[in-house]
Length: 490
Ligand SMILES: C[S@@+](CC[C@H](N)C(=O)[O-])C[C@H]1O[C@@H](n2cnc3c(N)ncnc32)[C@H](O)[C@@H]1O
Image (spheres, rainbow, N blue to C red):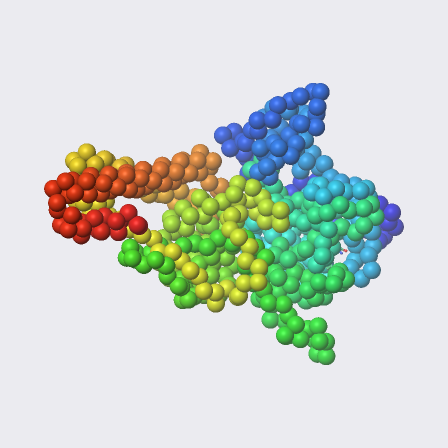
């Protein structure tokens, strides 16, 4: 570092996160993800490269368990495999970090290290630092429950400044059971270029810092989309039209984040094709933003980790007419098991981005009604005993699968409650696997039941119409057939 000693910023350098409010997790052997890469000493570039199953799910290989052994290239966080960077003094933005080599798109630059603390503690520290007059803020969100504070202890990543048009981004990786925050290149970066990422969503820095990034699309403030910005009741400076209320950007998490529409479970009649839901309370959404609750009936959670937090909002859930297990069920089944490119947490819901959408709660949502088929009624329409027995058998299997899933939920409940008390234990992989298996079994049972109903109704229809042609009772069967056809249309 080309700095005079007296100018050097004061902080304690650490290479690994420190755990001050809880113990670091010890990964259980059964939870270690082992990839299927093959060590090829003649081509070491293949050792846990971009096609490694762990790399694809943003999980680092665990030393001693990777088939590529010491040649594994997927342990960059653990081995501090950083890009070369240099600390420099910027104009107006304090210290900053520049690239000290050419960096390629997607390249890991550095881990954001600091003290891992609870979100509650993060807010407490943020207010304390602010009251102490600390100008620079160094607390970043890790997940829905935790943050990293690099104010007193950290590494060079703490010097990376914010830009509204950044060349870097944050991504979360799973390293031996802990989530870790890394800074990655969003584009090719030439040596000597300042590194910057967008602090939005992740930053505990308040709304009072004017952004000097100089980008044409600059939002005016640091963390303009952060929770702090939205909640802060700061009195704007007089005669400064950058602080004019109408110029303060409105935050709509749906514009930036993938979201998942949760369909409300309805007991609507089979003839209801769709329901146009304008009632705000019927519009429920899981998205990946950090804002906890925005708008009545809108439910925003950050990640799989947030589901339990989401569940604790029991009032909202009751308003929605949803049971906690329904939410867990839907969210668990709709996750992609990887981190997304925008740096959001692993296992984000795989919904679509909703650019240009109206503010939440005002949108009209077309929700298809769930159609109910009663197998007992279907059985009455079937003339063959075998057909009736087959449908009954599949119905039994479906009921068993549903009750298996319900009882498994009771096993998962303590983990959810632990999350709510913030003494969090992650859901053990074995239990998560059981849940997925039980969910799949239930879907298969439903598929088999409805498949059997369709097949037997069609056979019934065909045999009745050929019989009635033979004995001339076409009209008598017309009513019955139209009833069957109604069911088949469902
Ligand atoms: C994580 S620190 C970055 C390193 C900091 N510049 C330093 O000297 O230690 C975040 C602080 O840097 C400053 N900063 C970062 N990006 C900025 C920007 N685009 N405009 C103005 N200030 C910025 C703000 O004071 C912010 O609280």
